[in-house]
Length: 287
Image 1 (cartoon, rainbow, N blue to C red):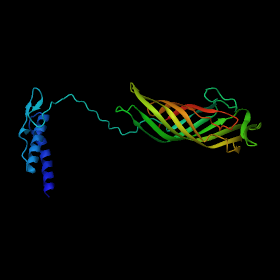
Image 2 (image 1 turned 45 degrees about the horizontal axis):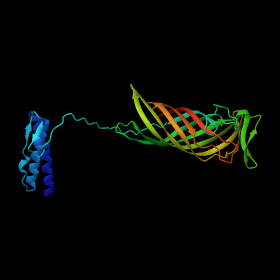
Image 3 (image 1 turned 45 degrees about the vertical axis):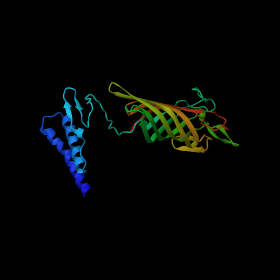
Image 4 (image 1 turned 120 degrees about the vertical axis):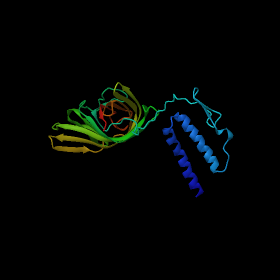
């Protein structure tokens, strides 16, 4: 009971000074600290202890200081404190991305020759599933962003060639009467990117780059005749299930960016007759 009375009395004492400050023409800092000093003396009185003899203070208006008191310190009126109330997550990863994809000779930007491709006719379409990130600095313009996305990649082969198995080896065949031959696969992507944000005039810009872990699945070789007739030749293209890519993205605001991705691992396993590295460049859109 005694504790409750003490707390109530303390609250009343702390609220009362503000009425006095409003009613009197005092310097706010002076009034507040004087009243705080009074509260301390009252608290000492409540617990049966005499307040310190030097608890009384004098305020020097010219030097803006309190002397000979509990709060014996200078006052700096030129303090600037900023608070960041922005709870939005840091970073930019696409909500949707689309672009043409290519197969390159490993470590180069030269088209591979093992599989005749219709250059620029294949494409990637993907969607972001999850994003998170954090800033390294108080300005919230440098940090790390990571997430999860899923994409489907399609490649159109030239001359109606297609991939299938022959005596345990992946081999190119030809379907002379086909309209198109396709190979495709799905990828789960886990990007981890370093990001820098900047502002030019009223426009926000960002660039991020890093690496992306990948899991490939759903690979298939397919032949199409007309609009409706098709045959799924094989559901095993001897792909590397796991891979990694270098990724970079340059964007404006939160809605539009250009991205590029170059695989650091071969698309096919080592025992395949073809070595190829996926490369994609396209547009990404934020949601």
